[in-house]
Amino acid sequence: MKKLIALLFVALLLVGFAWVNNNWIVTTEYSVQSEKVPDAFAGKRIVQVSDLHNAEFGNRQRSLLDKVEAANPDAIFITGDLIDSDRYDLEKSLAAVDGLVEMSDVYYVIGNHEVSSNRLEDEIVPALEERGVEVLRNRSLMWEEDGEAIQIGGIDDPLMDIYLHEEEFTRNSIAEAGLNDAFTLLLAHRPEQLETYASEGIDVVFAGHAHGGQIRIPGLGGLIAPGQGWFPSMTEGVFESGDTQLVLSRGLGNSGFPLRVFNLPEVVVVTLENE
Image 1 (cartoon, rainbow, N blue to C red):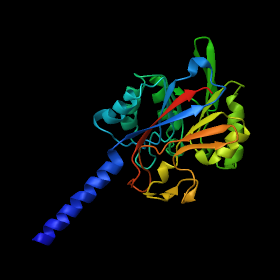
Image 2 (cartoon, rainbow, N blue to C red; image 1 turned 30 degrees about the vertical axis):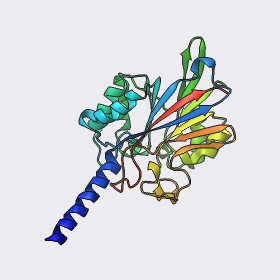
Image 3 (cartoon, rainbow, N blue to C red; image 1 turned 90 degrees about the vertical axis):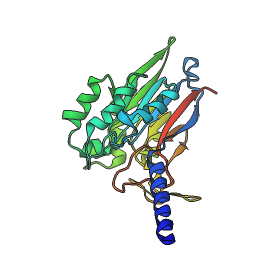
Image 4 (cartoon, rainbow, N blue to C red; image 1 turned 135 degrees about the vertical axis):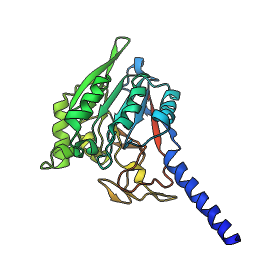
């Protein structure tokens, strides 16, 4: 009987551990500094939501929305994989979008799962545009404030053209976006293209895709990430190459392996600062 009780206790601990690792959203804050940030944008807060993969956080995503609202966003960036192509359920993700558009302007780029779902053009993009989301598909626009402006751009995922090398696809997409010399924030799903973004002179990139390494080993970091393989070097945080900074979110949901381990779902908040 004692052994049975002990086993049940261990089982409950494991269930609780798994639940926390996959449902307890944390907020991670970074500051991005650049002398190119206009005075009107110093202190602006951008909330990044990435890789939801149809995950649910409370009734109609209430827990997620509460985290975003608490961050007091001036803009919200969704950096791809809003849905999961293997268990497609757009309505779950749209519940989050419905709440986000009530808080701030929302900007979105596609990830590889939107592409592989084969529902991008007919369902996903129309649903987002109907809700007022700025869907950035190799295009850019200006964010204006008190007579000053910065640029927000977004590019498609390289899975859109499997016949082009990812680096070439990324370069072509950035060129198509028509970026100018203003301080630029680029939404791009894939972090492993950092050197390409840097070579194109992008100031700040917001990316996801890596899922924080899915399983994080204490003291070592992430175990595996799409596009990087085993023991990836880029799973979370802020990375630099030349004058380019890349903000990488661990994301919120899962694809493939159904669990996150030592890898809490994350909402990222970036504050712009001028030096």
